[in-house]
Length: 287
Image 1: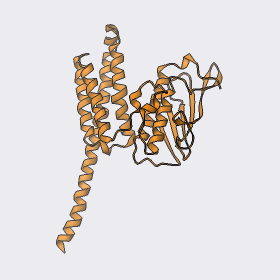
Image 2 (image 1 turned 135 degrees about the horizontal axis):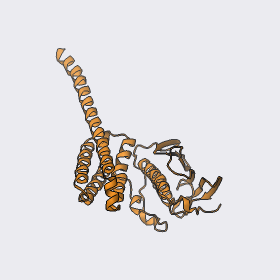
Image 3 (image 1 turned 90 degrees about the horizontal axis):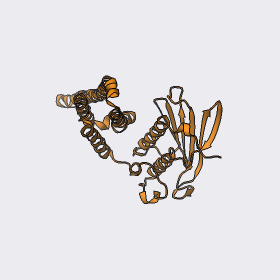
Image 4 (image 1 turned 30 degrees about the horizontal axis):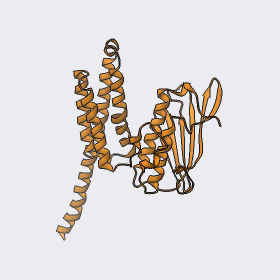
């Protein structure tokens, strides 16, 4: 099959398409309680749909643009890889399928993405998932012959404290780096950081999707938004300033709602424990 070589796909939509898949795979890799075999996991987000099937011998990834995708070129990707302990090639599980289907000029085109730079990182993330399922850590030296855009993503999955540390570090770096852009932006970044601190007090109570959205916002959406705004000329900045502040406010509200929900969950648990212990020990004292 011919390798993918379509310049029209080299855009932000495709990068986002791949980024969300990486996040999905990474989240699964970090789950210590992840069931090992014959499980299918799905995620739909912002016009993209993902499915990962984990079997005894293979890992299968499906990625697709949905009707809500902003991309003009709708695409579907299939990657199937043998588990490393079943059939190995160059230190990775042997690749069975690495196909992309997309509509272009009224035709369905089929190509191979195995060595395409936009999709290369997916194979490393699947490899990491395979190692995580087997209880192994990623050996970065093993991957030297397989370049990837962001090698730091190949580090072994952090525990929850490590994830929190990275999340807060990223938020603090963004706040300090962009605080001088404008006073209102500095205030918004302080609010975002403050609400994030509230969320981290009960971070363990968040489910997988909530953690994913929070991590995506802090480590991806927020710095990208600020970096793009800073790249505008002065006229463009003035034109987009109110929308920028509004978006930052929405991010703050998202974190505030998460923190408030966690506080409510904590109170519900406290009330439950009080009632439970009252029943237990008031009955004992009445005997």
